[in-house]
Length: 326
Ligand SMILES: Cc1cc2nc3c(=O)[nH]c(=O)nc-3n(C[C@H](O)[C@H](O)[C@H](O)COP(=O)(O)OP(=O)(O)OC[C@H]3O[C@@H](n4cnc5c(N)ncnc54)[C@H](O)[C@@H]3O)c2cc1C
Image 1 (cartoon, rainbow, N blue to C red):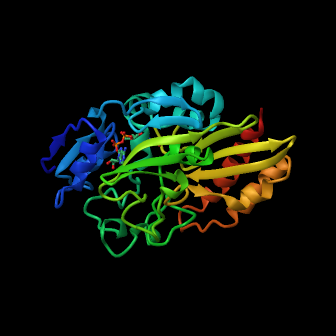
Image 2 (cartoon, protein in one colour):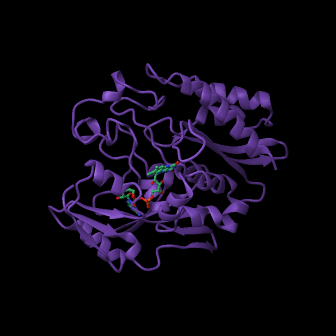
């Protein structure tokens, strides 16, 4: 492991100034539960690690006039335990509860969870130079691909591992990004970049940018949501397939719905065909199963991950039914 310097900035301005230094590979660290693994594995070789937790005032969950503001250094555990989130954003609450283990939820931050790198075994092997590391192929495409993407593959078939990202996107969250030029706010759905846009990174952050805050719109009366995650192990595991659903109802029928999956594509994956199939209909076992089957018809599995398509159908149908329950 190469030595690195450890930066303890006192403001976001100092963080972005560190990041802007030319010729220096600087990485921000929230809880370090992913970044330190990458450094040990040799897939990240930074000159400087910038401790975001040293910046005062970045850990908060605040009710504001137009919704909820969540600071980037808020831990996943604090998010899971927050009563406002549990009451009005049930899908997000359920997602936070199933991230990793209690120890990792106590250390890991929402910013780090949303910016974590994929768990693809080819990407995580420092000696394997795949497209994501400047190489010229994706080794999973013809190689071992049991856990890889069934949607949106091509240049890279790694899946995006975050549990919070699908739930936050389903709830219509936005990302507040700080840079030396100031701040900008974008929908979290647009924060993620598929491989065709940038195969080296999973999001649109420039090298001087930092995710400072996540904003949730005010919950509407009658909003319902759920998050379901299928894992191989009972605990401490990444999603094989997960589904976040948030719906608004007009009487018994679906007025609006968002279904976003994790573990199935290089970025959180919205199932618009399933959403269209449910809009204007009431949610029953049959309509939920039909919508899930519509979504699954677009899947393009690889040699070893066809089983994910059946799991997707079950997880999506059950998440839709769970969200519809008052
Ligand atoms: C055994 C194990 C199991 C896990 N299981 C799950 C799981 O089930 N579900 C799940 O969602 N995750 C899981 N994780 C992944 C991850 O560790 C956690 O999700 C955690 O929340 C990451 O947060 P962190 O603050 O520790 O990230 P860090 O390690 O500090 O950072 C992760 C990445 O994000 C970047 N980053 C951090 N904060 C910011 C920011 N504010 N702006 C820009 N970039 C930033 C870092 O540079 C780094 O590249 C698991 C990890 C391990 C080790």
